[in-house]
Every structure is written in C-alpha cells, then in structure tokens.
Length: 131
Image 1 (cartoon, rainbow, N blue to C red):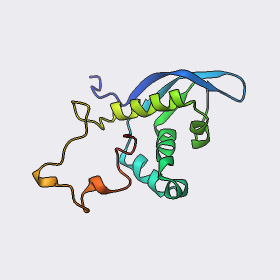
Image 2: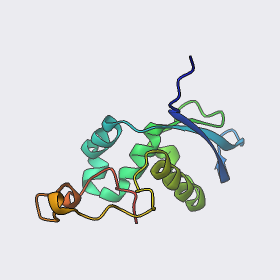
Image 3: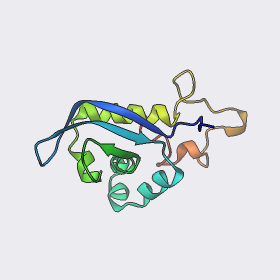
Image 4: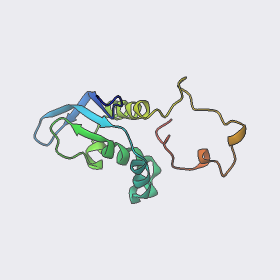
C-alpha cells in the first residue's frame, strides 16, 4: 500500500541560482518542516541577533535538493533572488499549512484570548514567515 501523505514537494524557481560552477539551479525539492526545524533555528546566534534571519535557517533545513548542489546552507539561501526567496516562503507556508483554509490566520477564540502569555505573542513561532 502506498503512503498517502506527501512529505516532499518539487518546485521550480522563477529565476534560479547560479552555482560556483556556472550551472543554473532552478529545480528543487522541499520537505515538510518538523518541530526541530523551527526550534533549532531559534537557537541559532544569527537568529537571536536578527529574528528576520530565521526563514533563511529554516529554508536551508527543509530544502533537500536544489539543482545539482550537494549541500543547501544558509549561505546558499542568502544568494537567492528575492522573487525566488518569496516563492519558497509561500511554498513553505502552503505545504506546512500555516494559514487556515480561508487563507487568513485564525482569530483568537474564547479559549485563546490574545494576552501576553498567548503563543501568538511569542517573537518566534511557526508563522514567522507571515508578513
């Protein structure tokens, strides 16, 4: 019986990344994120110094293939053109279902009123890529 859950998702970058060897890398695979992907990224000193760096760390962990590159590092993610970076952020949100079915964040309900102790008020959370 085939596994009904997809954990890897292919993508094609709009612009692509030019490797050191001159090859253009556009096709890749992103896997579903794990809790560790988010937690480990929060411990990174670059994220602690600049929270906007968290998506770079997370994307470098969840992109398992990009062209013929052997390793996807934060340094590789830093060289992406913004069109490709934004495309990967949207794909990350989509495959990890960070938005509700209507495409908007869920409103706090009676059991999760917005208050300082609510997870929504934390500086780092799964929705770090929402703008």
